[in-house]
Length: 160
Image 1 (cartoon, rainbow, N blue to C red):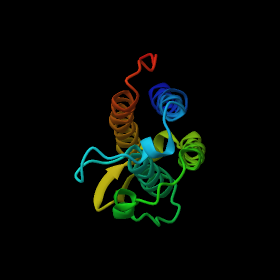
Image 2 (cartoon, rainbow, N blue to C red):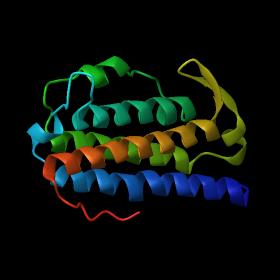
Image 3 (cartoon, helix red, strand yellow):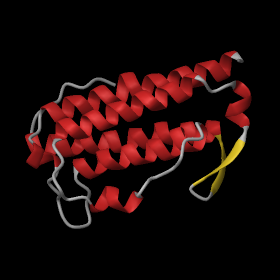
Image 4 (spheres, one colour):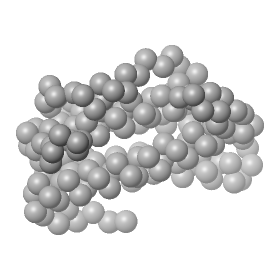
């Protein structure tokens, strides 16, 4: 694999596993299950919905789109869920998803990065799909941090 392709894969894996996931975990440690499912209004997502959404999106784009696993995602349900799934369960699911995504990413070749495929009706390369997941995670981690600060009124002491 070329140096730049390997570097891209390594960085994507590090951002998902070592940078974003610990920030989510830190936020969840500061919250109650009720906090995780609190909505500012009917048009806003709860942290719980955002976690379900990250789980579904990562599975669709990485495991299915890049790795070839079946896609069983129900995107709308990620936003419609109101069952107040415990935060420990939400975190366990997301950790499992990120670990599975990491396994897929560890086996992506430089050639595979440039191969085009259909994901959610779009024709994209694996590189584009991976880039999308990393930037999508970043956006929602930022929202989770903001919502956590709003709920707790605390400095979460997160770096980066």
